[in-house]
Amino acid sequence: MALLSTVACSAVFAANPSYQEQEKLHEIAAAVSPERIEQDITKLVSFGTRHTLSETASDTRGIGAARRWIKAEFDRISEACGGCLEVYYQSEVISGETRIPKPTEVVSVIAVQRGTVDPSRYVIMSGDIDSRVSDVMDATSDAPGANDNASGVAGTLEAARVLSQYEFAGSIVYAALAGEEQGLFGGKIMAEQAQKDGWRIKAVLNNDMIGNIEGINGVVNNTTARIFAEGTRMNETESDARRRRFTGGEVDSPSRNVARYIDWMADRYIPNLDTMVIYRLDRFGRGGHHRPFNDLGYPGVRIMETNENYHRQHQDLRVENGIQYGDTLDGVDFDYAAKLTALNAVSLASMAWAPSPPADVQIKGAVSPNTTLSWQAPSNAEADLVAGYRIYWRHTDAPNWEFSRDVGKVTEYTLENIVIDNYFFGVASVSQDGFESPVVFPGPAGAFGE
Ligand SMILES: [Zn+2]
Image (cartoon, rainbow, N blue to C red; front, side):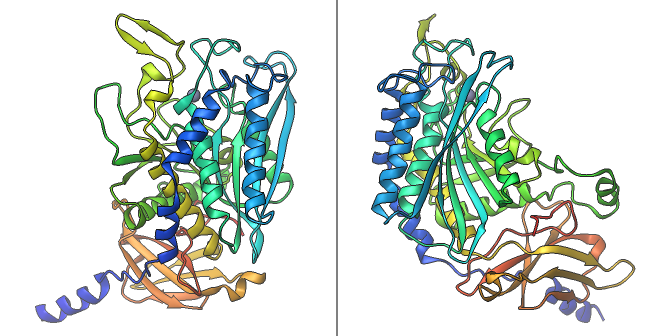
């Protein structure tokens, strides 16, 4: 009798690692160049300050020169791929704000690599153009912002160089966002415009400080990184929250499942990099440019170094009590920034080659030994891209998906003898050539939208 139950158990719990290794993603990871990232960070630092309120007329100093250079660089990348990028400025005049009191043009630079199958579906990589010193209103002092956040912009440019050599099913957007230090304005402008234009955003990978490996506490570590991801979504309705109380989803927002996806990409494609998924919107009480997207319900995460050095953030350049303050070039490790850029690139590529995450995922199975998941098949050009679906589940206290099963090209599947109460479940779409979407947790708490 005991033997029989053992057999049943092993069938239920057998992990099914049917993911296919993708040679192209190894190729992309290897193509990211630390030398080009170093050149770009050096160039951005050379503008002296990139403060949002700094001068815009000069061609060598200030935010105006910096954004014109970034635009020209995206244009050059586009030229090299036969015009594969749509490059444009996105701007709005902001005034009457604590950190932008007088009318100031906040100008981001955006490059879109249009998808060939489902162009209205987007994954976005971002970094911030602007920099600051101790006084957030000081627009004239040297504010090199080498790590915060020339590293994020340089990584975004480099990802565009590498990924523009390929064509993808969905669209990829490379964004150098403005006005971050003054109150997340560039991200807010972009997220609101995207919503107006009906962009189906499936992931925002915001890179803010991806080059420092020497922590304020003396730790030196170039083998780990952090992915911050919110729990419940900002625009959850009261009735959705009530439903979540009974069915779960507190730890399975789409942002979390994007974070788990990136974590997996690191394990598979980036040697010597282990990412820590952090169950938080951002660092304790602090902000970043993924938040304005999260505010509107879009999945988004912050990717950054593990060990921060506060002597090098938001500081006037100076030496005090033998300590050197300031965000200068010598505080950036370019190989490390390249490693995190490669992580972005493979994650963006994998999501853009994969079909859209399944829509309208539902689950049932209360008072039954079985669990049934259902979802919608895409009705647009993506229908042919989909080879099938992969159902995932894990113990409720496990951080990562533990078990999976390929269920073919169906829109409903019953897991026999797997009790709904004891696991969390989700489903991913898989393309004809084996690229997989992030996992979607059922119901509004986990939805990536249609
Ligand atoms: Zn900052």
